[in-house]
Image 1 (tube, rainbow, N blue to C red):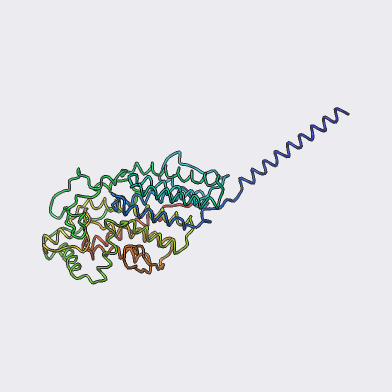
Image 2: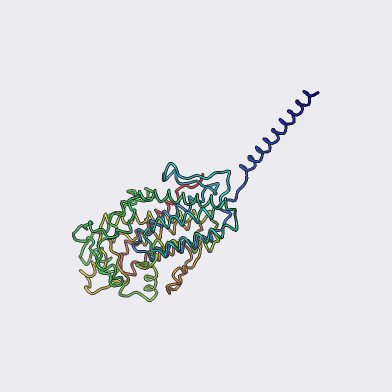
Length: 454
């Protein structure tokens, strides 16, 4: 009887152990199959404050010329996308395409992540990395905004999930920053006008230009002459198919096409209507502004707010806009320094009217082609892809500095305005504006074709 009792007891213990094991297995199985909230379930509203801070830093931190600004935009919003893409079941990381690193951070699919926290941490870290010499006030603003997000998110998720999410976002940003450091433009904000560059000399070639409306550019040496050699995001955007044909043949003959193009710039500035002057000044985006690529991000910000975009859509659109405007500047500067064409102000003062002035400042780099036109068209093409061809909006991004808002029926309208503004302002020939616009559309198409689907 005693032996039977021991056997029964052993059987009970075994059954009890099996029940415990089964319960634990079931719990783990249930945990691994838990449907955690996806990136698309969160609003992108909190992103707006980060966009505003980024644009302010481009404006006020020294050294962030348009090409340098475009680079910060490209990498910052790529990091945003990578920090939340694990929560987008139909989309994939671009590590396989860009090859950031073999050890690029991964998430644990059995654990929950709070994707807004990952996004906030990635954006904060990218701004720190992109503006390493920023005044303390901007570093404090980054910290303050990250802390604000953290306190807000702490009311919506657990400390454990919040900590895990912030850590993931920071790791993503660190890897993207390491990838960026190898593109040929690290610390470019410290060498905008390299003294080692010697411009070619000859008829029709660029020379430093006077800039009566922007004294900081007055006879300034060439800005970022090697920018076109930087690594692009998409090599298709600097491929031979996007190297422009030779510009019109330089000539001082009054019957020549080139003379007529210069004369058109001269006549336009002499006869600008009040509306054309307003348009040219609105789109100038020169020193002290958020720059042309920043203007594209400002417009993107308006659309994301108007459309109440979720975090998944916002991160994808911003990443592609960032890639587009960044590659547009690499393409544009490559073409500029291949052809080294002189600016209208040089030609007009030498051959038409020695006392002529532009309406806005002529930037210190060669003419061919217009970067305003190129990057604006790329951004417009990408925005049209995501939001449609008949999206009306108001660009009120310059209300704070007293500019009248401008209304558009679609995205191409804003890009066409940005392009023609350079002709109205006297800083580009019309052919540079139109060819830049066409090139930007092709760059936009290449970015759209970058496959994010799993």
